[in-house]
Image 1 (tube, helix red, strand yellow):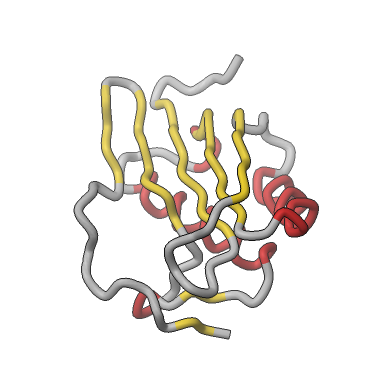
Image 2 (spheres, one colour):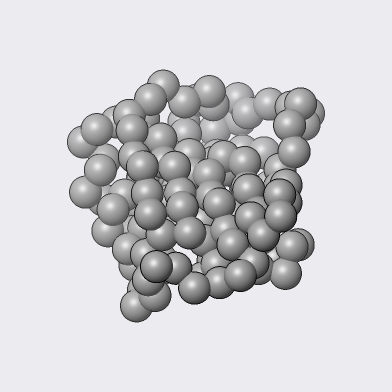
Length: 126
């Protein structure tokens, strides 16, 4: 299912920004083509958010394995278990990033999850 109420022009922020060895990726929602939300459930939307983050990191020469911290906003508390399972599956056997997860009203109708990330070019987590 696609939801078409997303913003049509770029808001006033950087999608990705480097500060020393850290790379910050702004919050990503499950946007597909034409800035429409794709995915009917939180698991599908979580994978899309993380894929969008990985695409942004690739522009800085990094991968999802370089993520050291994420912040996650969920539209519904009851989605936490399904979100967490999809999130864990995405990272597989790698060291998981530190994470904060909160429930919040999201800005785009149909969005169930938003994820931002901080990655480190120097690599190894603690």
